Image (cartoon, rainbow, N blue to C red; front, side):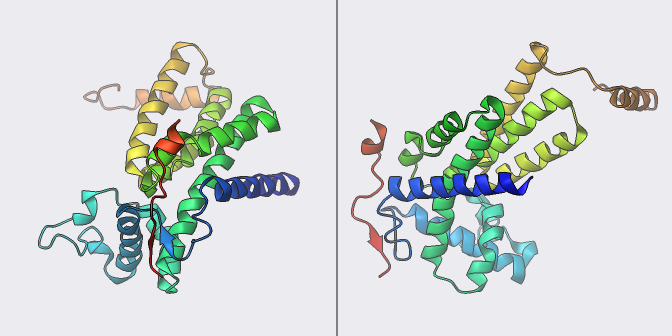
Length: 257
């Protein structure tokens, strides 16, 4: 990516960071001391902290968390959020305020969602204003505020990236984009298994619809020859395969102060 493009992306990210601060106010004001009024943010803080603790102390026992003893694999009783746990682990190791870690990660999910949707819309429309509007709609849809206390349900910024790659596959049929799509969907599943499963169903349906409409391009000669070679050498016994006000997340807030 050209430096000029990166500068534009940084500006867009800052725009969405500012909008996030405004739309979710007053959370940014209490970013180091309070979370929305619910037990779920504290549960999310524990999940992040546990992943950070377990990956350096006993990775083999990661899912045997210190809850519901003597039941096994208790981290799997809810969404484990493994990727966010790994990303935030260094901050827990540095003994930074857990409330601050959670709030920064949580608010970042809104800004990143707006930015990735901006990138998707920009690739489809070539219009910056339209792309910003698309990012605002995706980042701040009322559904998010009905689940404001559920951190894992805010982690959907991988989905627009996956859609960009699907469009590239349709247009160019490059193996590299297919690999990146697989990695992106893995990142979504390991960020939020709920949203990951929804995204898999959606992308599978989109791909089938694109194939049925003839949107997928024919395979390039090299890919056709590789596929023919693989079939020829396959063993004979194998087969072919107004919502915001209704969902106000800020009744009296809990504080650690």
